[in-house]
Image (cartoon, rainbow, N blue to C red; front, side, top):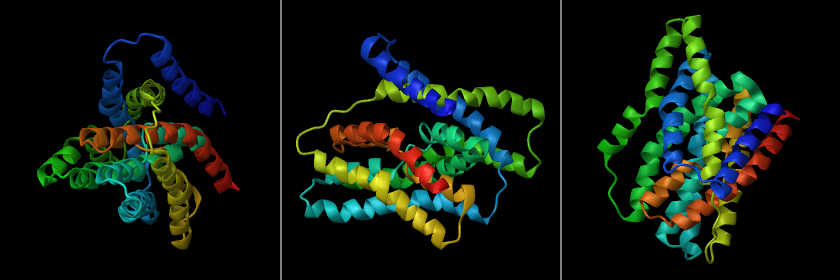
Length: 300
């Protein structure tokens, strides 16, 4: 309970500071730089060597693929029939196909399932959501904005991402027997800064400005992201005989709010940024209710 309370407090602090205080210019990029380039790699280096790799770990990764692929199929087919622009279709594929599996996913899953759940959340994020963002996400953004995706750009984004490098190092270290205790004692407190800073940053960036005739698209997008997609992932896992914490974490990561980086990508490629940010803001608020409720249901 106290861990979930910490999430709400950090998120609320960010919202209040952005609304009533005068935070320094550039505070959000600075916080995000620390989270992405320092705290997240430290957390990955701490957790990945401890993960006992087994055949079931395909599921959290496959769940991320199902969420994105399903969004692409659903909105790619539905959008033209509803008279949506290509920009709107591309925006919904990105923000409703990619979940906030790090900034929101790590804190929420750690609060509900501890370090064991967090380690599985890292697998889903670093081997599932992030590679999809850096590859298929850029392909979708390029296609629906009328640009040509470049393989060299995609490969460079993946290969140079600090947490991905940390993931590779962590796997090697895990195979070699793990870090000495004193190294873990260095990584742990640095990685612990991710939760409060990530949620504070989300709060600082929170926006909800719904434009004309965007409500229907928002409802359909979040209906997929927060409800239908995780239920399909649950069905996939149960059909494949996956159970326990692997099933739970994979489904919960599939149910996370839209990814902040996906909304940024939509903005960068001019894919209806107002809708992307509205879906992001509404999804963050709703997921703070829907994800814990889904966890209670899965436990029962």
